[in-house]
Image (cartoon, rainbow, N blue to C red):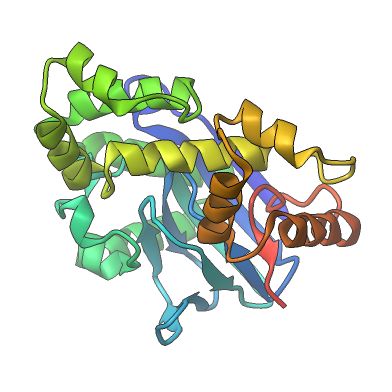
Length: 277
């Protein structure tokens, strides 16, 4: 699978982790994706893909979709060969480009048509016609620069989120409110508008992400030490969060990560996704 990544120039680097191009056969027809501290815009240039959220009917996407920072895992069904261009936003980074309150789309998947209307189809056509993946990523970055619209409270949310990220979620929200000079109610309201979830929930997501990213699936895992380093103070809290984010126990999660590592070593998608079948 070909994966090309490009980090944007300032000031977009305050909103976007990277632009990416992905093409090739997927490692598995379906992958389980836990919520992570990020949002992603997928501009699909290949066959339809499917997203299955527990308790709902699977939804098919032809043009692509926007996924904001969520609260539960879901399954992503790939076509035999995938081809897409997209944006990995920081949790707050998508808001200046989509005029929809975050709380209204949390744990939902918006089509590109719902996000940008007919313009989304035009952009996909231009990306598809680009000569190289590098040209695609440059075109997409230029389009985001053109479409940026300031959102009230964005700088507040960015600064507080930056402190949460720097602490990998192991931080109390009260002192962050005091340092920012705002009430907890005001901060939670801005977060729900711009990120889609509260700052406390975002901190939980960062703590979980630290565990996932620091896990060496090829080695023996000391779950207690790993949980402690991530800021969990008791094992039961850690296991509860793990079930919430992945739908399985830490032991079952590790087995799936090891399966991915053995069957598809070095695959671009082997970060947090798990085999779902």
